[in-house]
Image 1 (cartoon, rainbow, N blue to C red):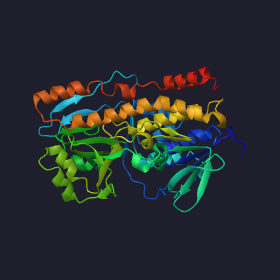
Image 2 (tube, rainbow, N blue to C red):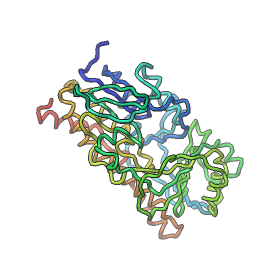
Image 3 (spheres, helix red, strand yellow):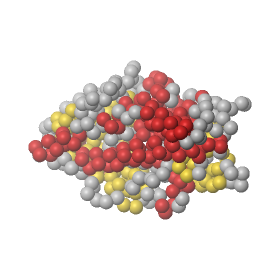
Image 4 (cartoon, rainbow, N blue to C red):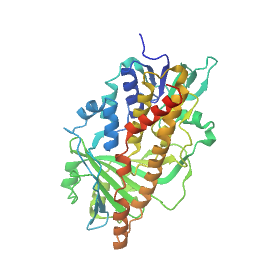
Length: 420
C-alpha cells in the first residue's frame, strides 16, 4: 500500500481519543496501528457528555456524524446545567447560561461511541489484547513498544492515548516515580437508571429537560439523559475537598459495592438524591485519580501524549474527554500538513506541545477548583450568592476556545523557523 507520509505511527490505547486519532490519520493515508490492552468484550458502560468544543473537534476530525447517528439524539442541542440544592425542597440555585456561540452539546452511551469509531476503521488497523509495558528507542532510531505477551512493535512516532495509567506517560516523564498521578480524595459511584423507574418512584426534579447537579457539603450528584432521554446517566461524588491529594491507591480503583454501602454514604440527603441513590442497583465505586501537578511536557523524543495520558483531570467541568479530542484535532492537523515528514517530526511535536500544554493544563486545574466549589455548598443565602457568582461564565473559556487559531499559530512558527 502507498502511504502519504514517510513515517509510521503506533497508537498506544484504543479508547475514544486513540480511535478518533486513528480514523483521521488513516483517512489521510498515514500508516497507523492501534494497540489496545482490552478485548472490548467487557467495555464499561457509562454516559459521555460532550460540550461545544468537543463537538467542534469531532466535526473537524470528520467523525461527528457517525457518533451522532448512534447517540439516540436527532441533533445536538444546547443542554446547560441547572444547579439544585440536594436538600429538601431542592431549591434551584443557578441555571447556567452562556454567551458561547452555538453552544450545542451531545450525550452518548460510551460503548455506542466506541462502536461508531471502530466501524470507521479497517479491522487490520486495531490489535486487541496488546498491553504495552514499556517504550524505548531501538538501534534503528525508531521507538519500540514492548507488550506483556513478549512481542514488540517499532514505529517512527508513538501516540500515547493509553489513559490515566499511561505507560507512554512514564516514558515522557522519564521515571515511574516522577509520574505525578495522585488520589484526589474523591470517590464516584456511577450507574445508569431507566428514566421511567425514577418517575415511578416519585422523583420531583425533571432530569430530562437539562443536565442537573444536586449540590451538598462534600458531595454532589451529576445527572444527564442518554439514549433518547430513556436512561439517566448518574454520577454520585463524595469528596474531602480540604484534604491534600495523596499518593496513588493500590489497585483496584474500580470496585463493585453493595446497595447498603452506597445508601450509608449518602444518608441524610434530600428526597430526590435518595431516590437516585436507591435506584443505583449495579453501581461501581471509582477512586478518582488525576495529575497533580500537571505535566511540564506532553512530548519526549517521538512519543506524544493525548487525552488522560497527558492531562488526567477531575471531571467537574465535564471537559476531560473534550480536551482529549482537542489534542487529537491539533495533532492530526499538524501531522497531516503537506510539509510534515519524518525529518521534522520533532519540531512539529514541539509545536503541538506549545499549543496544547497551557490550554489543557489550565482546564485540568479549573476542574479541580470547580469540584471544590460544588462540595462546599451549605444551603445558606451567602453560599447561594457565592455559588452563583463563581459559576457565572465558568465554562466560557472551555467551550469557546479557538482551536483553528491554535493550529494557525503553530504553523506560523513552523514557517518562521524554516521547518516548513
